[in-house]
Length: 441
Length: 159
Image 1 (tube, each protein chain N blue to C red):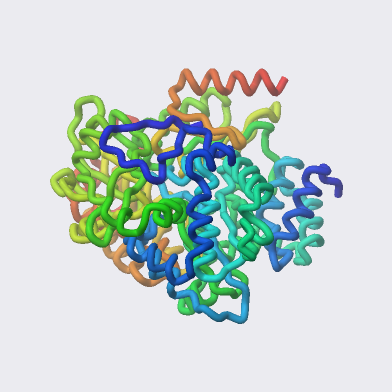
Image 2 (cartoon, rainbow over the protein chains, first blue to last red):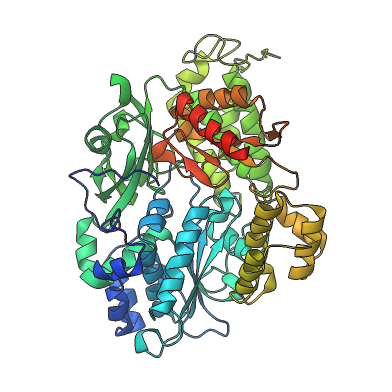
């Protein structure tokens, strides 16, 4: 459905079968599919985990936690069944990569789920797909049925004596369900409210059993790691940041699209070469480097390698790979307002700092952009955001606060330009409904 | 309460996938809504009975998920994404255009029952913005002209 793009700098590991009809199981096998599963069935669980550890693969959902380490936390003996959970509730604004994987290469995801299961002794895997992606559920449903028919799933897979079941599960519209414990609640048929940790999912997860939960892209990388070795994968990236990544370029670039580039690829180069530069001959103002929850970075800060550690060093995050490019005509107050409107809408209301904080911040930013802000509101916006940090069960509160704090700090002059009845300097006259300044004390 | 044989087959199949009955609730509610048009009192009572829950528990779940609705909608639910990536590429203007064209606003339905409209959060089409979904179909890289053509096609199909 969505258009594919390509660029000479791409290193195709996850996307190597895109556009080649690999949703068909025979075609997938022809293109080397399910070879990793055969190999993994002959390996011990420790060998699989060590291979993934050696690959320096880190969680592609946003947090960047080392995948091999996550798997090693699952206890060997457990009184309850263990599960593998594949997180396809992709909803971080700026992120549209899992959609392509599920559309073009669903069997890789299934294969990754089974290999993850072998590494911890799980017998069941669930692939959770957001409700809006109905067409992908249909593709996945068929892929799973075909895998059963060919003996890659079910009883005694490939004659190994091991049973493994994979099911798909559909959501019904909720950003927060992308958070691991909320996703488990959702799969259990409840509101997607986060759970308090510890205990962590590796010990007490889905249906109370030890659970591995990984993003679609993370699990899709696993078959290649098993086939070609952890070291090979690690060397594609930078130290401690193995492999490649699907970067979703969006916003004000000439050639938006999903590109697979090595970890550590320079951000400016990504925008100017891969993305064809900022559109309409304008200049770069800012970048959201990894989905809306990441602190924005300025044009000056954008000469940076795109890996987890380099971005953390400059106070942002690599997040989910959604690179949103903003040109010099963008109103940063409006951008902050739109981000907050999203988080206010998605907050489940379970934790008070997030429920109240996002609502107040949304109201303040709405008012501000409409010209009704007063000077002390600027500090209030920052103060409110900072008081949400680390005070909620799940990271949604942080996700709302972090970009807001970064915008207030880095673009304070734009907030000042909107003060006390002045119209937005970036919008045409009359485009924004103006609100009166109530009290300028 | 009668659902289609397709729904019943799917429901029976899904029950086998989980150790608890309740797990089928969220996907089943969405499939039931696709058939009935919305989650009516009757659907809620039926799903509560099937999942061995109270109606209140089912309503509690419904209110959490943005795709689930207890109010009837038009045959085609037009969902225009207005989140950041779409906004940066003109979704505000596009949404205004759709409002003008359909003569309705957020969460309203046209008098003939053909279209409903929603301004929605990120639908995962960021690199192909601005985008919208009509029911489950994605429409991407939109312009006013393209939207006009798409909506006219749906209007013709509804006749």
